[in-house]
Length: 213
Image (cartoon, rainbow, N blue to C red; front, side):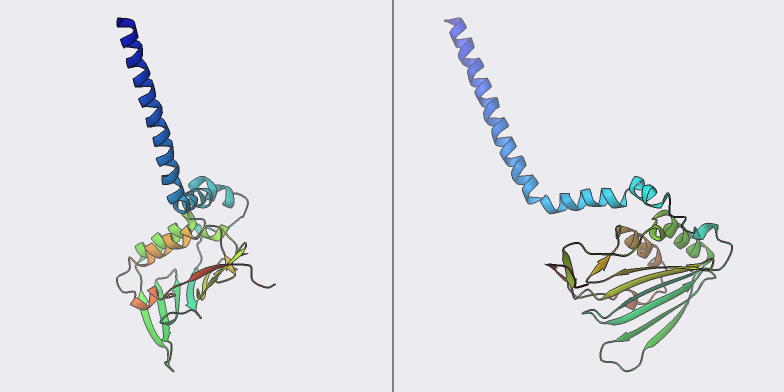
């Protein structure tokens, strides 16, 4: 009798564990399904934005390093043509002088604002451009989708007689867009930057299909 009670208890415990495993697997599968896109994004970021991915992308490019350059370099950013407040351009020199030009939609004249960045701010900007591998990237067509109402983002660096330009728009993008966010995070530390530097699209929509070539 004692053995049969012990066996029944063991069977109950085993069955309970089995139920917990089945329910747990089901809940986990639902959790993963619900977080499918964030997980995909996390995996994509690891593949494109990790230190290893950036090292691999840069190892054979021969890209210029701004922190090692002894000559003046220029950084230019612009956003235009999107469903947003207006168009904006930032031109910045490694000497510290910068200009932000902007024009709201519906206005006839642009506004120009001169700025001055410190040596420390310029050094930090050069470091983040180097460390993020921004100049190792190249513009490429979007694969199987377009982004409506995005406008055109352009980033250009001139250094040591060479020019490197990247474009992100409805039809084109770059492998590691997080690098751009890192560069912007450093730029926005400068308290004198006008609010126009944040201009961008009010909203965008991704749709299947590629741009006509």
